[in-house]
Image (cartoon, rainbow, N blue to C red; front, side):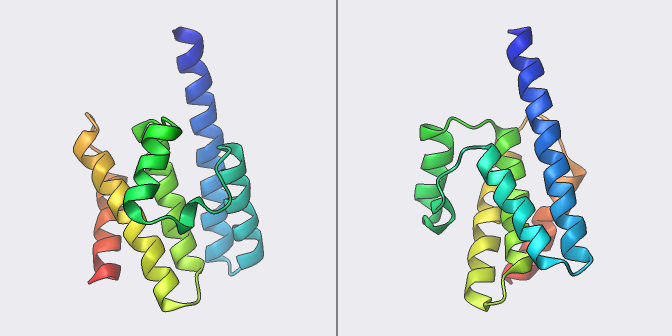
Length: 131
């Protein structure tokens, strides 16, 4: 059990670093590099290439039932979907990413035993985008 937990924590830390790099690249206007980090993030999780194209219900089912991701993984995926929304140029695509990120974060917020100010801030940002 301890080995599994250590592996999960190392994986989460590595994924968090990838997210941080993507955010920094986006803020510096390096869109291509940010997109490469996002692709790397999804490849690390071994996700299907088209999983982002799924509707919200199918996406949730895929991530929780088929892939059996933890709430920590769901939260990170939501953060990356938000970043994809920030990078998207088309308004409808942007909104699609933001909706999916919001839905995943809402689920995590409801089910997580711990409070996260960062999660609350992301939810607030997403609410503003969606309104």
